[in-house]
Length: 343
View 1 (cartoon, rainbow, N blue to C red):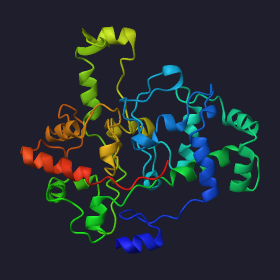
View 2 (spheres, rainbow, N blue to C red):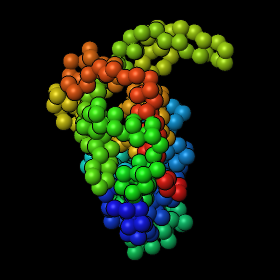
View 3 (spheres, one colour):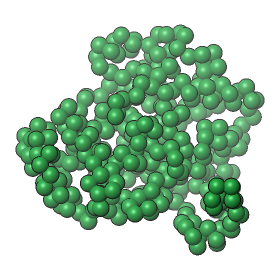
């Protein structure tokens, strides 16, 4: 599809077409997304972990902070282009956005509501929401299904495509990507990166939506067995053992990933393939935020993942790349940043 055709049809260049959500439902969902009062103590909103100015992810922390400062075990995934993602969460435990939306509201370490009935009762006391629900659903009365539907509708508006790569590959603009970015794309294909981060002839999600063990969790498990340096105050660094870290904070633990959902041993430490669209905006990386930069991600894959993990995906092998090739790959990843939606 040409760039002009994409604009005329309302499609996001480079993404498969989807029916747009109802505008009135998305408007209500936006209000709910930024509403701190939806949490049990009125302090957390969806937008505090999925920050619009940080690629609808969270850049400051490897893993998010939940209710009353609890460290959550996983990195907040970006919501950009989430309308194209099924199933949801790193482990795929929700099939649709409507199923996903209530779960953070009820998780005891996130927004910590005892039930959706409690959320509904609170919303029903806020007069400002009544006209929003009426416009969205024909009734001023909130219900669990309407809350989920509105949040899902807003998330479906968070499209970010039309990147330099999209304009180059799908828009007919031969100059949209620089020579290093073009070389990086060729190398991306030659190395088989598109086996999981798929690229089609007419559009590209940059994910197969599958679940793979790339050695990240085993790598993190091994790292927790080593001493680490901790900055106690500015300019004061102490070396701490794993036992000392466990006494003063969360020592973390093995994350079974998809296996927790399916119960299958072959899904151990497997996580959903993230899209590479807008990846330059969404550091830190991987399901646990353990790799702070794209260079660190590239280092992980150049090393062949974590070969000591016996159930790591067998396609991962050590790579031999020159510094110039590394630079080209990173340049290509930078070409995947699209036109961002308004928050």
